[in-house]
Length: 275
Image (tube, rainbow, N blue to C red; front, top):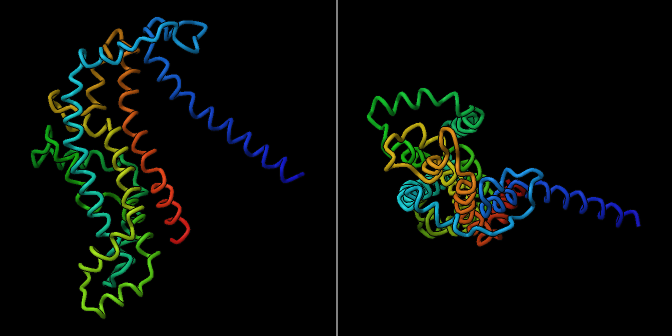
């Protein structure tokens, strides 16, 4: 009886917590179907009196949505490829290969996770200014081909370490080299971790506002997150269109998460348990 009561309280708290966390999302979706006046009506309305589906069509007329979407894909695809490939290579090296200073190099990479982005912002911006990278996509794309960040290297290393090393030894006896072991034996086994890295990279790039704001000046190169800022005026803003655009931007991330939910949970769980 005591166990049932404990479970009931736990599920009740989880239900309340889940409900509270969904309030901003619900507020965004319901506002996307309203007029700006209705959004700020007091007392607030739970649902719109008339569902304005036209708000979603209007954003395509107000901003260059298709151009921003194309620019986002132009950044997103190479960043995902670069992050997945190089983080797998780094994780494999730190987990399976012995080389001088391996632990020191790995500790330094982990230490970079402690640095706030604001600390590296000015030196990085000055570097890209000196080499002519401002107002190009290079500052947004190229860093992903250097490991993709300490967190992804750590995640891939932990996953590679969870695979028995006897597989490597058996492959070496059969005549395979380290590249063949990495590509043909180990990579298929870390597919859940690769999907986790891909999903996190997708959400980071898809929602990235600060990077394009710093490095892009030409409006024709804006990504979705930055381009939708055009909906916010200096004195008045079309909040219903902003909410509609935000809803449209949220849909791809939600779809990808639900389609790969099984692999995402599996990848994170296995990394945490076996690491």
